[in-house]
Structure formats: structure tokens, C-alpha cells
Length: 601
Picture (cartoon, rainbow, N blue to C red):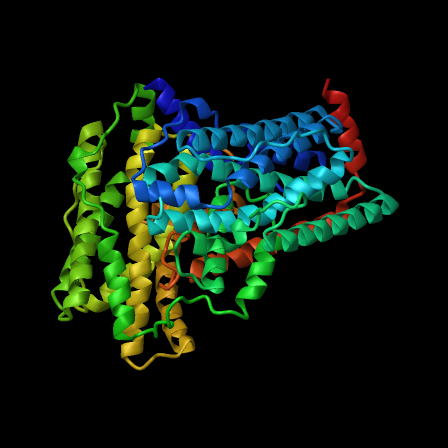
């Protein structure tokens, strides 16, 4: 049990990491080097290929697996990648960078072992492996590996998600490969940051030579993929290294190129979202995909008109189909230590959260009694059930752990119950965006046991569903009232968001006193981390919102006001950093690196 818990924790921290070092970090500095090296080292997942469980497959699933044209090239690619990265590590300029590169190489070698076990278990015949000699030009080989992984991983993220959603392979087999996919995300993020850091270490003449080498690498990769698109490798044998870019048809799924790019972009963002926002992300493939998406359709079916009956059917059915059935009392509530109980009891907002959830359930239930459309009624009644269940869940927790949060009487509901429902919906969009960030802060800080956060993650998922349902319902409602133009809908939404922000500002003022304020996320997030700052909070809210929205059907609308506002704020922060560096930065980069080299043995 202890080993399994450790693996679960490693799996979580493989996806979520923020450096303890606070404040802006200059790209190319010693702090930047520490940041991306520590990311790779500290997010390592210690899974062992030898103990991975390969599920039994039905004959049809096994035939599909054997029919994929990738296994030879996949095994050989990982073998070459491992020796290339290991050779490049030997010439690394600092011990920390060498350690991170060797970790990267060992993980590439482990990927090869995973694939070897898979093909052996399912009886897949491979061609004899070629030798993997160390490259004569380590930097060239490292660049080829890094850029190739950036290309292949971008498409592989989307195809992996497609295989999972389509049921092409059993969920157990897909889940077995999940740690490998996330390691690829870490690898390409490490490569992108190394690339930016390395460029800033070079004087002008060396930088020009390096950029020429990068252009040569891209030319090589393009030529290589043109050859492999014809099905012929360098040695004249049949290959399919382009499976990552052409694999939707091999997975038996009819998908337009635009829809595949949309899925790849969404998955790429989701897999990168959990890491420190000061780390650079790979940009070439997302930018190329974003550019291509402007010229090709992203829809497999005709687009759904906002306000149409098809739109209503879609957002209601998606909401109903994603329902999770559980009873709060039956959840696996953990036993807490005295220290954990003390921390839980010092949180000042349980009474108000309980009251807010009870009131939410009452508002949604009251509004449902005014709805006559049977499709909408089924979805809104389900939301009322879930809001009331949130209140019951909090009541179970309060009683179980002896929290001082007695139930308060509900105030009378407003006479205009539809307006109350709309106010509640916009408030929930605001609270959820902030709550996603606060939840991430608390989880990273280890404020409570991971098993407790897993329980509350269910609520976070339901809040995501609620706000997606609400913004689609609101757009449908506005269109039904003749406000089909986006600008008209946005103006009305802006009015309600203004009301929500006004309530939040009142909460901030009241939040100076414990247990006053129902929208606790913004005013009390500093409870969870000593190094809480407004900028880090905005970064975390933005990243977590993107991660949680990545699982939403792209045909549905999503809340955009808060993400756009946060993105603008972060752009302002970045502009301020650049202006600040331009004013105050005598170049301390060389001295920082010298100090780092002297410090490392």
C-alpha cells in the first residue's frame, strides 16, 4: 500500500510542479538554468517497466495493436534518443545540467524498455535492432532529437487522447502508457528552455553559427519526414515515423485535419499547464498548428448555431452524460493526524461555504420549477441535485472532523428567480476560476493528505461542468431572445460579470474578518502558502482553468471573461519585467554562471 501511495504521489507531482524560488526569472540566467533542470529532476516518476501490468486484450483489440505500423521505428527511435542525450550530457557545462540530461537519457532508455515489454507480451514481431553508436556530433544529434520530439509529441498528445476517447484500445492499456506520454511533455519543455538558455550563453558570432545549425536540423527533419511519408527509411526499408501526424486513420477514426489540430492544441496545453508558468513552453508546433487552423475547418460535422435546438441538445446531454453518482457519506474520508486536523479547523470559511452551497441548491431548484422545456429541465434538476450534494458533502466533513461550522438559516430567495439563477451562474464562473487556483496552491503545499484532495477534486470537476453548462445555457437563452450577435451577448454578460465582481469586491473588504465572505478563494488563498503572491495566484488560476477546460468538448462554449482578463494581466506583468530589465540590467549573466560553476563541485 505504501509503495502504491508513493507511485500515486509521483504520478501527481510528475504533472504539477512550481519552483520554491519566487519572483521573475530572466531567461538565460543561472536561475533559469536551475528552474528547468530542477523541473525535470523533481518531477521524475519512478515507475518500473518490469512491474507494469499489461492487460489481456480481446482478439479484435490485439489485431488492431499488431496492425499499427509503428513498433520498429518506435523502439529504434527511443534507442537512438537515449544514446544521443547521454552523449550530449557528457559535455554539459555544469553538473546540474549534466544531471538533468542524464535523467532525460535514462527516461528515454526506459521508454525503450516499456516498448520492448509491450511487444514481447503481445507477440509483436520486430525487425532486428541496429546498433546505436554514440553520435560524432553530440550537439547536432541532441538538436535533432529535441526538435523531433517536439514535432512528434505534439501530434502524439492528440492521438493518445483520441485513442482514449474512441475506445480503440482498452482503458487499461491506455492508462499504462500515460506516464510515458507525460514524460514526453517534460522532455520537450526541458528542451525548449535549454534552447532559450543556451542561445543567451553564446556571443554573436557563435549565436549565428548555432542558428545556422538549427536551420540545418529543421531541413534534415523535413527531408526525413518527406522520405518517410513515402514509406521508405534511409536504409530503404519500410517505415512510418510519420504516424504521429497521420495516425488518426490508423486508429479507425474519421477526423478532419482541423479537428485533429484542435485536439492536439488542447492536449498540448493541458499537459503543459501544471508546470511553473515561468518555464517556457515549446512554441513552434502550436504556432504552426494555430496558423493552419485559421485556414481549415476544425469541425467533423457542420458547426452548431448558438441558440439552436441542436445547441440545446448538445450542452444538456453533455452535462447529463458526465454526471458522477456518489454519496458523500460513502466517500473514502481519511483519518487525519492532529496536525492535519488543526490545519483544517483553522480554515476560516467552512460555515460560509456550507451556507453558499445550500443556497445554490435552493436557487437552482427554485428556478427549475419555472422551466417547461423537458430537455433543459432534466439538466437543471441534475445541477440542483449536485449543488445540494455539495452542501451534504461539506456537512459530512464538518461533522466527521468536528469543525465549527453550524448550519445557518437560508435567507428568502429573490422574487425574480431567473435573475437570481443568472447572478448565481456568473458568480460561480468567477468563484470557480479563483477556486481552481486556490485548490492548486493548497494541494501543492500538502495542506491536507492527497486522499482528501482527491475527494474535493470531484467537486472541482462538477464546478467545471456547471460553469460550462451555464455559459452555454446563457448564450442559448440570449439567442432565444433575439440577441444572437456575439457582441450583444457579450454586453449583457459584461453587465452580470460587473455585478459578480462588485459582490467579490465586497467580499474582499469583508474578508479581513474571519468567517465573513462567501467567495473565500481570493481572500483566503494565502492561508495555503507562505510565498503566496498576486502574480503567482493569477498564473496558477489561469493555468488550472486551462487544464480543467481542456477536457471540455470543443463544440461547447467555455467561460472566457476571467481567462482573458488574467491573460491580459499576465501580459502586463511580462511587459513590466521586460521594461524593468531594460532599465536596470547591467548584464549579470556571466557572473551568475561563474558563481554557479564555482558552487558546483
